[in-house]
Image 1 (spheres, rainbow, N blue to C red):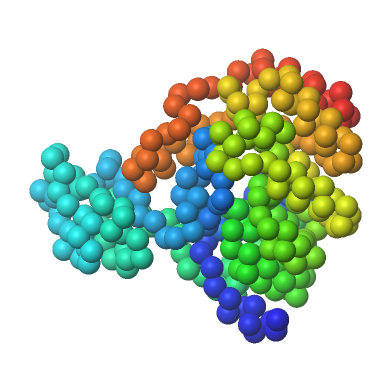
Image 2: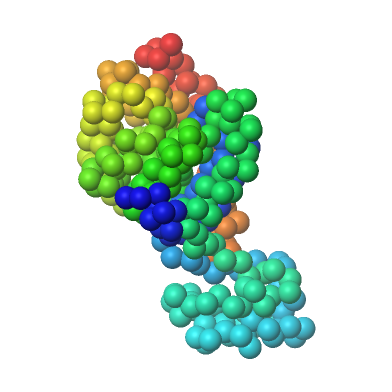
Length: 306
């Protein structure tokens, strides 16, 4: 595909985060693409899961309908109605595909849209604003999500155009995608963060909604067919799911055999507020991961990855 065609390719992002130092080598700009095939109970970015643009509502900022009715007046689908406490009630099914005029009209910014339609050119023009930091630190751009391969054509066009602009490219992926969607994009990356939540398939299905078989197969194939890519496997350590010696030892052994780096990520409750904004229940409730458990599991990993 030509550079002009790639530049005009569009997709939906929900954030572009600058000055990241945890998403690949050096200082990076992380481009978050909307859409994910998994529904992890511990997801800290619930706004990333659906591909479409979504409406969120921060009740704490709302002026209430006793003082402002702008959102009701501009809503074209009848999705916004009065709640008993004079805040608003949102029928999110009616919001699908609408213009989101309500968010633009809200003077208190209590209505928020998660997701923006962008071209590849718009994305990379933003990324290139910090090119001086990439040059000095060995950084670049990281595609994340959601799951970048949930929008495979958009992801590929971004990576291919980034290569033309000599931007170091990386991805963060859950690995659950058709290989024919992943492989073309892997030609254009140099670094990958690859999530492995559990090697127990039944447990994986219960907590994420999908089997882990494709994820494991894709990782093995990536390591074999794209040896130039630096792969770092990561496991989010989740209380009550995979925070046992058995779970972590199995993944540590597997990754050591593959010859890739392995890291543990401690569970955190960041993102809880966004569930409320989207009118959803927080799946994990109020559980916490103890420092002691994390330290014990880290020692297990060190037995295989020193």
